Image (tube, rainbow, N blue to C red; front, side, top):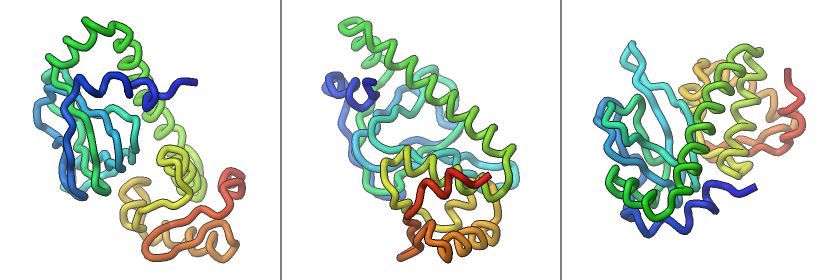
Amino acid sequence: MITLKQSWADYLKYGRRLFFKKKSYIFQQGHIGTGFYYIYKGIVKIISDTPGGGKRILDFVGSGVLAGEIDHLPYFCSAVCHEDCVVYYFSEQDYHNLIQIHPEVTILFAESLILKEKLLLNNINVTSTSTESQIAQSLLYLMNSLESKEINLTQQELSFYTGLTRITIYKFLKIWASEGIVLISNRRIYIVDPKALKEIK
């Protein structure tokens, strides 16, 4: 199957290459969207402000993913660099110029929207399972999404991502660490036994 990363490689020359430092905002919730971003290198944290003034992490995305809007509507979330990132920015005009030359890009753009819909459905399905399963499924999703068994998140960030308390996260991670399923070192979580996480219901 052709991935977005492979597919977009030929079109990056139509965008503008940008560099963002860790913790920098690529775009912010509430600002008007006039273009989209292709994440070429690095990990980006997608977050949303909560009614109570807090933050909820919606997703962590790596290279080969599109983020942003071109419909002149406010961004419904913010994109923050979890580490130093390289991205390509495509303005609305860049996009229109691109599809005039390469109309097949509209299909890739549609595929990106479908992936976002699948993410929303996955988040809904995960919240209907047990607390232990929610944490396990979240770790597995991050492992697959970021293509690494090393999850560079603090327990507080995992709490913001799952919507569960840090105490709850700590309790299960401690149990799994004692069972050899995960390893916690230097504020990072290493998935040692993905199969065991998959079996948690």
